[in-house]
Image 1 (cartoon, rainbow, N blue to C red):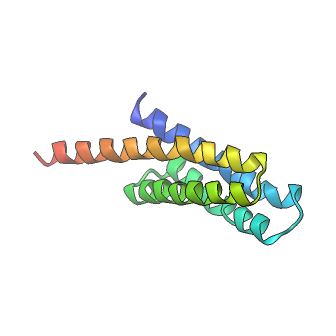
Image 2: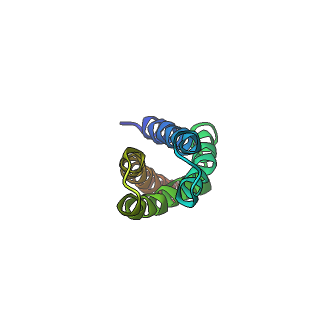
Length: 116
């Protein structure tokens, strides 16, 4: 798949996880863990929009690190408060992070070739 296709796929998944994180507050009673998970929604959504429409290396780094951290936290959250959204969010993170790592590697190779 082309880098543009991968970028748009990862961006779309970030937007999806941003919306689904934000929806948690409407689905579950407002407990601390629900509010904490909900707060991940807007940054995911914004990163998805930025990665889709404004592809910059800094955005790509943040769009890789935040889902990696979120995935680790999501695994811990699942063991404390098992629910299908936790699994869904971790699965999305497990897809997004390797795609963005691939894009970072491709970007680095392209930059190195341009310097030759």
